[in-house]
Image 1 (cartoon, helix red, strand yellow):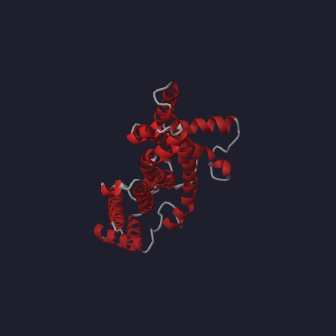
Image 2 (image 1 turned 90 degrees about the vertical axis):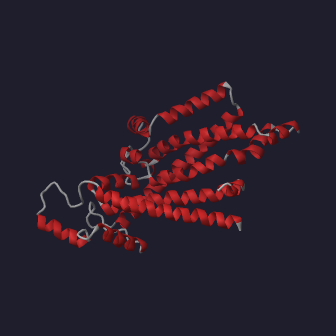
Image 3 (image 1 turned 60 degrees about the vertical axis):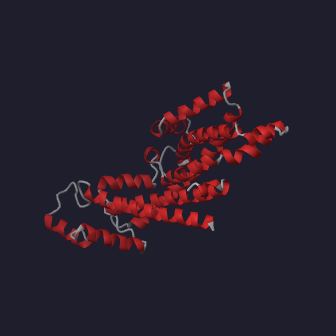
Length: 308
């Protein structure tokens, strides 16, 4: 019963947060300077007014907002002004698999690198191995993706010719983008894992296990790992959503047609419905992942339910 109330409360909070994000995005996009009907060529004023009437932009802003929510409930994200002949639903349906593949591969790499490095550093804490690993992790955190991405493209695509440098044509087209994202998130995962594992390894039940002669590897992975991995699980919510939503920089550098690319173009073109639709999809991803993380945390540590 307690678990059901906890999950219901978290679900209600997620819905409220989603409503707030959709509302703020709608009004901020509409209040920004410019509009979707501005072009390099001067459009006659009567044509602009006619287009506004066709799309309902001649109505008061609260009425437009109510109309948008009505379409949104039906799953209709509206037309794209910057991509003539395409709806926002079609654009997101085409771009989401790109960001999803890029993010999934990046997440697998981040976990495969970050968790072992963090556990090993915690096991060798305050030694030269720990200092060396954490120095590399700190360097990885400090170096942004817009520096790493061009370097990987220059070395492995242009000089060595192992991968395609850009576009989305085959598997080698997005490996460098996934590696860039994976390396970036692995540094945070490694740091979180190390800090949490060190905290768990100093607790009384670990000292008791050592006194009983439990082997070091058994202490590390059987007794300490489950508690030490909890902060990493909490971090996975926004990390997964960020990875799937796509890194704007990575997609721009490698020319990948993901959600991030479309959001940047939509903001430049004042493509209101594409801005709202893309932000809404990314928000749903973040909130869904955070909710699933809450469920997983409650399973890993029952005290979570009591503290919230």
